[in-house]
Image (cartoon, rainbow, N blue to C red; front, top):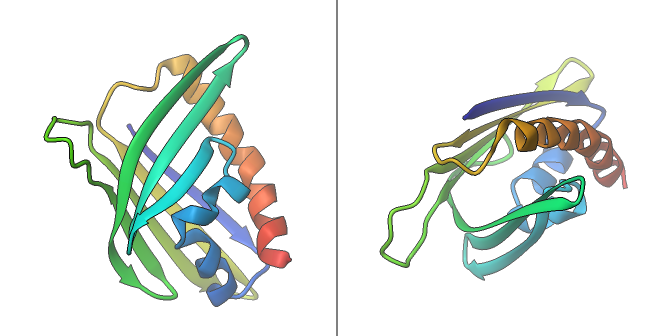
Length: 140
């Protein structure tokens, strides 16, 4: 699954980048990220949760920052240390001035089978709700 989300908001590049370049801040605005604990200099243990009616799915993964070009781009990749084979996860974040505003482009690639079409719909709905929470967080 490849998902590209674009959002333009009132902010400075630096203020927006400070929030989206730190996975530890994602639970503050991205409802699917239940927790994000820093476990290394640039590595986080992430717990994702999605609820569909009475059913819930959760997923734990370790993500590491693999590149950074502040205040414009950062890349995170799944890095597990258990020796098992895991689905590929990458998250590319790009922040650029867009006239008087700032444009955020987030590209998520997931190479596994966690998401059914129903959970995928929940993902899209949550992304839309998260945009407003992100705007409020960056503005504060």
